[in-house]
Image 1 (cartoon, rainbow over the protein chains, first blue to last red):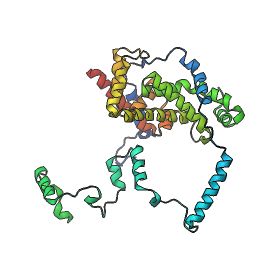
Image 2: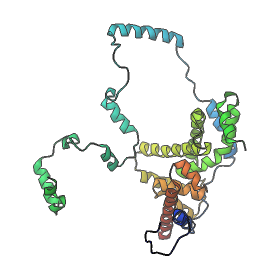
Image 3: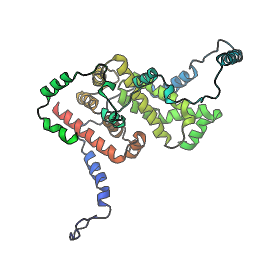
Image 4: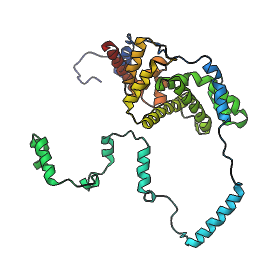
Length: 168
Length: 180
């Protein structure tokens, strides 16, 4: 794509499409000071005996032996469930689908606690609604406005940066 | 070597499963081992993770839909298992990720299964300073000599992005080795 019509020079077809690949290939061929052997060793016969030890591990996976025969449990459980439903006057018309509001806050917190989310604060900020958000949503104790002013006085050298008047 | 499709089919067929699984282990154990070893560094940990990887593959083979190659699917499981192993250790020991990486590398000095000279030890120290993605790409390309297309399928990243990551990694490593 030559933007300048007066430019008589041309490039081979597909030159720019493959440029990055060629450049990266060339760049990646310059590894000179890095030793090729990682120097990691394995114990003798490790790979030869690996199959055996793995298969042994699979065969020896602990099996759960039921303490009570399953049929008995089902019978008992079914009768308890039937009694419970009648006793609680179960509301059949209510929807059985789980919704977000069914989750206890502690469950949600535990989920966030125990799972790794590779989200940066910016990514989280993108999905958080900005409108109707108050400081008090994040902070357990409110910020005193005097403290806020003190902080700004001490830490902000140029109030013009805020463009306060433009935004108000 | 047995065709991949036949192997997958046999793995899903009860009567042929055991034999097919042996073939699977024979075909991939070494390659997966080195992928894992480059992440967890110690042989014993690599052995644990490799066994868990194959157990996971064995239990989940029915869920393998053939969208990707069996090879990349297993590599992905091995990589995730190894990274999760590290994360669990970091959490368990209550140290930072960097401190844990430093500890792993300093353990190499006393590791009987690491026969590196000073430069190779320095290289491992340098690799430990790389961000996770660059570390993975460097190990896969440099030590395991995988093709960019293969790495791209395993890590689900574009070939262009991988080349850039690899180049950056090499530059950082060279810089680190020169400084020391």
